[in-house]
Length: 552
Image 1: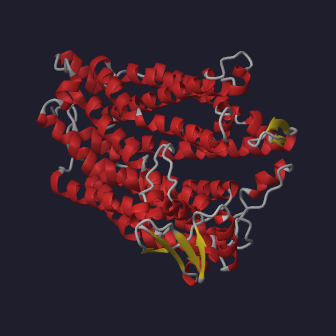
Image 2 (image 1 turned 90 degrees about the horizontal axis):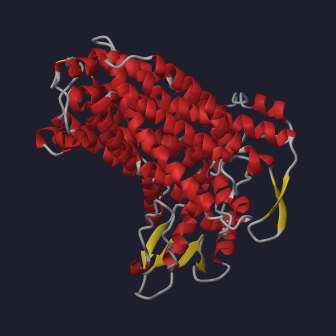
Image 3 (image 1 turned 180 degrees about the vertical axis):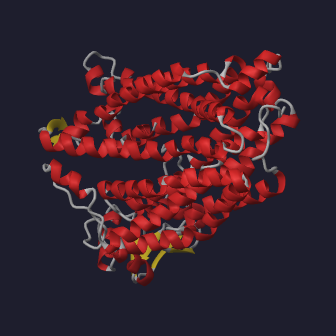
């Protein structure tokens, strides 16, 4: 599921090549978003099956759907190949269908795994046992990054560039990884599928489900019982608002938004950002087991809700420290350069664009979007209605409607001290595309004050993730009775993580563009995390000592 997100731009060029570059990236993001949007529907479909026919067989089906869909992405012919037969449209449609199948499978996979492990765990150890499931969220991201990095280094060092038609219609070349090497991680995933299916075929049905079946107390209609009766539905709603929403935004901020912030805001190159994130994941992953085990002793609520509060209190200083360490020239420019947008407030949109389809063409939107992408802090001043927006950089004014606006602003920002992407002060692990072995060695080239500082900050963010995410499976399993457990826990989990978490990057960017403050987007996870802590503390019970075999 993570592979697609890391390779979305390359995949877009392969399957949406009939469109201009900007449009193909929109469609690639749409396919990415589709996997998140369908997750709650997968939770409903497979949650119902899990409560009706059993945990084991349901998540055997989900892993097969996930694994086969992932493998087939690596086999799909590109748009150009299919277009030779006059059916180019089949390629992107097939890709979108596979991505939706992945999302549906993930919607059923997590709940099945969490319920199965929790119902097998010995009393007093459910937090520790289910925490192993939670490590896979981080280890899955780490594994996908490592496979991509190793494949990219090896393929580009050992194979020749490939001739292609560039976005402007001219002839050019692309790296072998971009041409065909990106398929390798998808194809290699079949090995993990084989191992997983073999393991799952050896397992027995969970004891709690067998006990329920033997006693004839199973639900005949899990969906209507779980969500159609307020006495059960209220717990699903409270689980969403008092547990998973806050857990999701802390998780996505600590891993995915941190990576987005490094690359998009701080202009750290993809290879360096991925290596730094990978080290933080390696160092922080043990926290899942620690906090999962600790929750068996002191409870789920203090750790999950405490993690939400600590993260909310420290996100601002941590991300500001990340800027100062990763791109010190940018940090200095933000302190010393005054940039002002003068615009008619009616000309300014809230640039919320989660799937990349919206177009913001007003002069104010053009100005703010450009400055936000350039990581520029700015203030806004209102002007008379109908007046086109202007941007003032260090006393020089530029009209957003001018054809050369982007070029002129770029030059003015550079003159004012804003660094370019190749500024030597930006953290960087220098690689040679043709030197594979040396590049592997450079992945451990982290022993400088700058790199170690960044890894330390990122590791703290990952530890927050382990706090809120380590005990969450046990907390959700214990909150619902056996007869509707799979159905009830899956939906709030996937709405929380698929929607609250999945919308974080788009929401944060819109908030940054709206306010002119590169840190303002952090208010999105902070507000949700605080709200979750309050709701969870007031309305959710502590469940660590609950007997899930008798609770009904």
